[in-house]
Amino acid sequence: MTEGKIVKVSGPLVIAEGMREANMFDVVRVGEANLIGEIIEMHGDRASIQVYEETAGLGRGDRVVSTGAPLSVELGPGMMENIYDGIQRPLIAIKNAVGPNITRGVDLPALDREKKWYFEATAKKGDRVTGGDVYGTVKENEVVTLKIMVPPGVNGRIEELLSGYYTVTDVIGTLSHDDGTTSDITLMQKWPVRRARPYKEKLPPNEPLITGQRNVDSMFPVAKGGTACIPGPFGSGKTVVQHQLAKWSDADFVIYIGCGERGNEMTDVLLEFPEIADPKTGFSLMKRTVLIANTSDMPVAAREASVYTGITIAEYLRDMGCSVAVIADSTSRWAEALREMSGRLEEMPGEEGYPAYLTSRLAQFYERAGMVRCIGSEEKVGALTAIGAVSPPGGDISEPVSQATLRIVKVFWGLDSSLAYKRHFPAINWLNSYSLYKDRLATWFEKNVAGDWMSQITEAMKILSEEASLDEIVKLVGIDALSDTDRLTLEVAQSIREDFLQQDAMSNDDSFCPPEKQHDLLALILYFKEAAGRAIEAGAPIEEISQLPVRERIGRAKSVPTAEYKEEYAKIRAAVDAETSSAVKRS
Image (cartoon, rainbow, N blue to C red; front, side):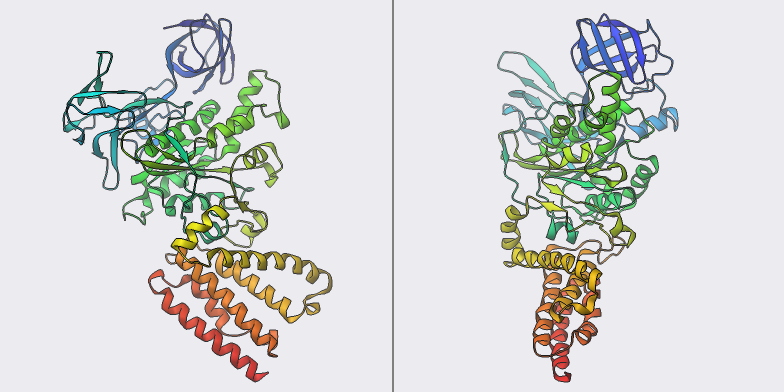
């Protein structure tokens, strides 16, 4: 254990001397209050420490003690439904212990040491195990059954393993190693947050993360194990989109990282998630969710650690062979924490004051996503999908954080405040968003949903692009200058925007739209375009076509309950044929 003395305090940065024996990224205890910190720079016997708590009251000569261990998280039963701060301190337990305000130096374990869990052993005495193998299971709640695994890098033969009720620190068995030593088996393991957990092989992402959001699944899909970003200015609906992704995406677990966002936004999450009925299970969404709450008024250094805490928990769950969605809100606030610490360290600033290593730090976060073949004797495939919100000042995505993120991620859902002000949600701009997974995932959609999936999406995007070009002409010379065919394109484009892309998050029937219904709804709109085009060629005026009663039925088609939509869509198709034919006869 190394002990030094403080020589300088600058906000969350503390410099201590006498720390020659300490290592980079060691956790330290600072001052009489034992504040938690982490060594981020070493110069001779001087260590630069970022302190994860308020440093008021620290002064020269106060002691600093290194624990000799890196910043780690506790992984095991008790994580689900929990709310942690950026360094995995349990906020509910802290509130119960010290009240609504976090007391400096408070040190409570991340996992409850008193609660007993029933462990059911699946391995037996004499079995040879290696890192990633499963000892047994613990039913954490009505929804989640955790696999208790051998920690990475550990192997040996089971000497004893007992089923029963245990706390996370109780010894449930013994493991003998090849060198003759033995170690205890417990329900809990620890892992350093800045080190990615190992896996056998990273697999190509070839299966979509189904979100039930038409603008996402159809137009700009993200793969399981993929990376995506949601940049957008204030008021453009980032939080609504993230809530929808957390609620409806077909991931087994959701890790929601509130990284430096406003306290009231995080409060909305904390209040809403327990009340949301999980569509998969019928229980509260919190049953399979872990929240990391590190708001803008909490210590800035902990904001930097929070994303690593969240993704390490996600990797542990992925090691079980599960699909995990990590939603970080927002990486811009995380980057601001990097900028503040970099400035206090007096490092050479990069663009707009951000550190030169901004891109590499962002890459370290997003590269930990992926679909992988997990370690262990058993064949397990897990996926970790990383979705980060970006909050560029003034909505300017040319700023460094947005640009660095776009160079790393494969999906860009660009939010547009003008769409949000028109009450168009999700406010994803279809003209500047993109997904580099679209072609790869087309095979899955065409095999599992419909053979014409990609051609239909391509046709819809073509119509929306044509609308953008025609709008410029309309602004110059008016809509009467357009041909009937071009005016039909504008009508159909409006239908795609309002009847397909626009979605009501508050509606029971429209909040989630399965891929089959997405395909059939878009097919209905394109079928109208085809029938209306034939009618116009036969002499029907566009003014009459645009006023057909079936247009309203198409507009309401997205709200038809999923269980009943096929029959209703067939009736609407028949009405399209009948009404366009009548329009031709009248002309």
